[in-house]
Length: 454
Image (cartoon, rainbow, N blue to C red; front, side, top):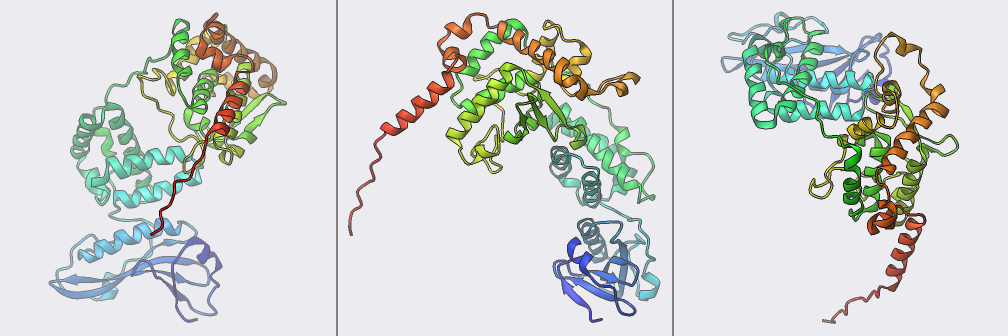
């Protein structure tokens, strides 16, 4: 069969027919020297390049990267780039030595083995990223790892992991530098990511030192942030929240407090996730991925909050509101950034999760129930015997209602006397606000500017 030439990708590989006899080659049009060898039983990613020594071409080297059944095209392409870069520097990818005299191609060609010698941080990250997708890690988790590798360790992307493994002092110094420039939490988090990528790379690269170089660092001390509010702080916070002009953002922060849902998951909440018959909001992709999906039981106040968000969304973003509970004018169509100026709103995000957990105690909610409401893991051997959804319909909703009632009781008479809170939370306030907005819009006089003729 005649050799083919096109941009190699996973879908195209699946459609390739077996050869009638022997084998044939598919050359990649995107990366020169990268191609696929298609045989009767398997398809192998391969690279080929010219080794040069003393200014002359020493030999043409062909090296197999791996079987298509074992790795994706994306991962193979990353490894191919690394191999070709080594060959351009006069180094054999499987030998590591620099060519000093002419050698035959047969002597230099390496056997087909899955191990990747001299793998760089960039190539190791590409392979680790594939493994995270296969394990169904959430997009937010993958993005967090990507930020660490491609931003914090940008200067190390083309550094061989062997170099880092043999020089742990270099890694320790990097940790110190990150701590100074980005802070202790980012420094520790980025090093955990580097540790994970290194450990994964060593599974297929046994030449890497067994001791992970991240073990050489002195970890920064980490303490849980104590930023939650007590009952006495809620009135002031509600007044700050009522002053926010955007009603959708206002409801988003309130629901974060009432539900203790992580903001990243709540931003992606859809109208279709609400089940009013069962009075729950389904969270399909919380922290930990789809395997940790759960339902949030809804109190009366939480349902009213969601209904206000939906009504305001239909008015402000009618197209996006068909899908999202908290729509916005963003690329994804939903709220993209929940952060507020601390001078405008003193507490948001995880501050409100801590507040929920703090208020759960005076509300009479047990430690176990609070953990289940917040979708936290339950410690102890007995955790495996608890069936959460059996408690959801009755018991957990009662506990959720207790927290919401305690929060609103802390406001006392403010919800009926303060003008801002009345305009926001009073019965019929949303309907009056929307009607007023429509009337004001109808009264506007739209005049087109006069165009002067040339």
